[in-house]
Image (tube, rainbow, N blue to C red; front, side, top):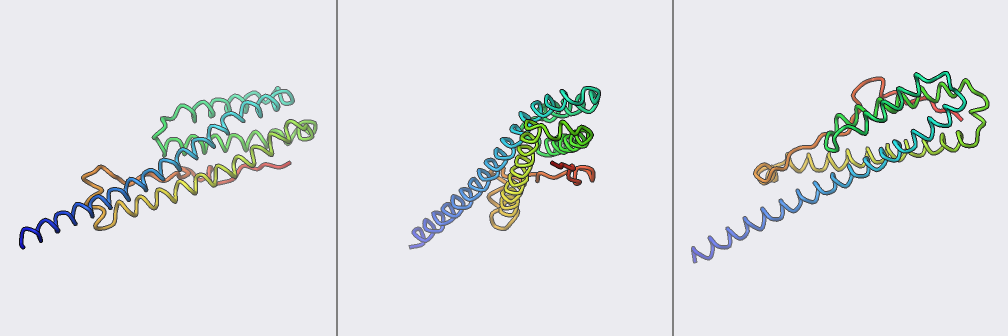
Amino acid sequence: MLTWLLVVLVVAALAAVAFLYNRLVGTAQMANEAWSGIDVQLKRRAELVPNLVAVVKGYAAHERDTLEKLTQMRAAAQAVPAGDVAGRAQAEGALGAALGRLMAVAEGYPDLKASANFLELQRELAKLENDLQMARRYYNGAVRNQNTLVQTFPVNLVAGPFGFRPRAYFEVSSDAERNAPALSL
């Protein structure tokens, strides 16, 4: 009888560990999928920037410094390693600020503001920034869920030995990045 009780307890403990492990894997996969969503939006923005720069460059040839900085920031954002959430957030924040400066430069060119190509790129950029904001919120929600699970008892007893650690949130790193770039049509 004692043997059966011991076997039942061991099986119950193993089942509990398996259940908790599977929950941890599920939240980790949600966070991975959420990061992938941010990455997709950032790649879309990186692809849109050269088109925007090319259109503006045709009108604002003497604003070369602004355009070159924007191109450099785009390259810097793409060079950040895939798993470096904080580095990616910082580089993308700087790129967003540079896009805001580009839009300010465009304000000085009435012909450019009326250009159908520029207006379409500006609309696409506004939609993209909205999609990116939603992807960031989804990622941070998935990270919150995983971090809560990893840090709560008794899950933390399973999380630590299996290598589950809290993840970093996608956050802006400076006050300048918190200010939305001024985009006007």
